[in-house]
Amino acid sequence: MPRPRSTLLSVELIVEAALKLVDETGDFSFPRIARELGVSQSSLYNRISSREHIVELLRAHLFTSNPTPSTTDAPWDEALRMLIRGYRDCFAPHPRLVPLLVTQTVRAAEVIAMYEDLTLALERSGLDAADVAPALSLVDYFALGAALDFTAPEEVWGPEPEKYPALTRAVRSSPSAPERVERAFEFGLEALIAGIATRVKHKVN
Amino acid sequence: MPRPRSTLLSVELIVEAALKLVDETGDFSFPRIARELGVSQSSLYNRISSREHIVELLRAHLFTSNPTPSTTDAPWDEALRMLIRGYRDCFAPHPRLVPLLVTQTVRAAEVIAMYEDLTLALERSGLDAADVAPALSLVDYFALGAALDFTAPEEVWGPEPEKYPALTRAVRSSPSAPERVERAFEFGLEALIAGIATRVKHKVN
DNA sequence: ACCTGAACACCGTTCAAGT
DNA sequence: ACCTGAACACCGTTCAAGT
Image 1 (tube, rainbow over the protein chains, first blue to last red):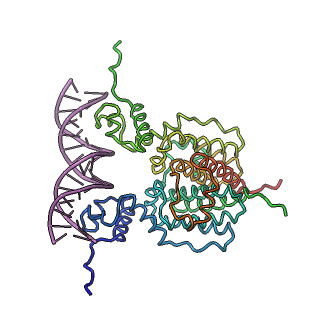
Image 2: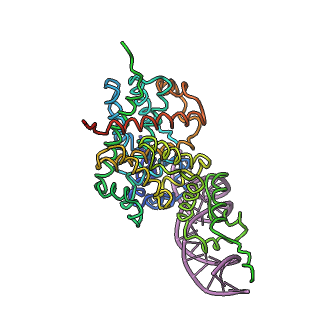
Image 3: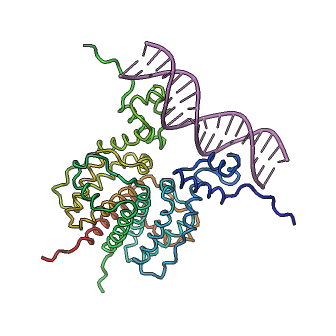
């Protein structure tokens, strides 16, 4: 049988080129992807339908390369720790990708599956049914903000430290670069879970 | 004395035009601002220095038009409620502006002043000094995520509800559009404050 | 001091034309 | 079926030239 003519393009090649460009420059574009792959710009449209499509493929790529284990047998708080940590760890190797993801609606099935596991864990916590969706939003807010923190610049607050003494104290007493983000995540994760636990109505046996 | 020649342009006019365009279309551009004001595109550069500059002016505009009251006399948890609520309420009238703000570093002095008040409240909570900065990040993550939720589309989760039963339950048991976002914010705010309270070491008197 | 017009180096998307 | 080249309608920014 005739072997297939060597195809110049594939979805995977496009996604890899886009990710490489984001890691190196903070963004991607059709002309730069095409140049990277040695094809014409318009040929990309044979594999993908739009810029948004590429962004969603990048999101899926992040999640499939870092799969989260099953949490349905774990206690609800342990499940939340695993899921939120796994979610955030996806972004760690590609921090510059985060800004492209946060402003676009999630369509990737892999991510929605993780939200299903999150919801199951929250249901097991004993929250009122009406509080599960708000708690899910809360977890989402936290994970999103934590991921965005990967791209935060070193010197967040400008000059004039004397005008903001408390802020200056807080910044001075905290480590820099990756440790700062890591400690914020650990503190936030535990505070978040403890906070959700306080919203569970105590059942009187 | 000669009254000043009617000036065609001002920073305020540029900011107002940009905000109007964002509210109506979700974005602004130099050509569209210029057309809105009846001037040439290049003349904008006499008042502002870059697109980023306009974004930062928009951020400051949001905050100055919705000033937060002094919270230095309030108990720490009440101060947090006021500050976080005030912060989020700034975005409510202009939801489509949020995506432009979250991916750019804060430089506006008004916002930094609010972070100072947040830090003071967290110090009053009794947290360890080393935990103030992480707690500040947690509050920041929450406020950011809550603001981004203003632009979330109605139908977040795609088709195939049967594949995600828990998620479908959660979505079905929650209201839509503005009430959903409001309930998520209220639940999250209280869970957040309760969670931070659990991280305060109990002093034995 | 302020404004204009033209130019430059980019974008995403479409489409007729080739093989 | 896949790829190309050209075209279209946009961007942000600079700069010489005018008043």
